[in-house]
Length: 140
Image (cartoon, rainbow, N blue to C red; front, side, top):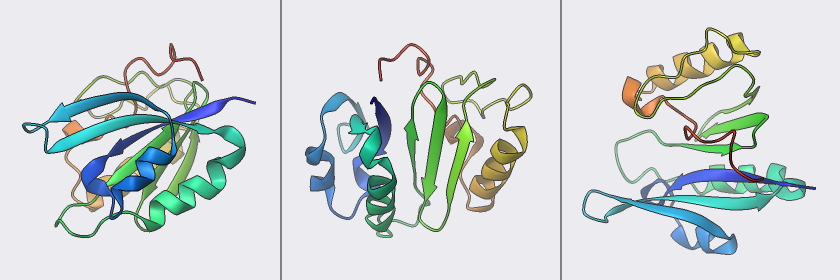
């Protein structure tokens, strides 16, 4: 059984220690190190419980909507504080800081619904990339 990778921003969590429960594959610093984007690995067998746990742990401290992306090369789960979207990654080619192109997506309607939901929460286009560009090349 494989694993999911999750892209988690430290500021998106009430309890940042949650990240330390999992192997950290990568950490990117933004805004002079105040904002950290962690890529962590979560066993596939635990993904349902961990998605719910991360959702409950999402911060409301800043006037900003957060999302967390959990993915394999085949599937993606995008988690907001109030909603979870589960979709196929087939046909998705993300470009960093560009709204994701869903024109060839297997689950086009689900992707479009999720993007519309994100936009309704004020997530800007450049943050609607949702997946790392190399997600199909990662080892899960």
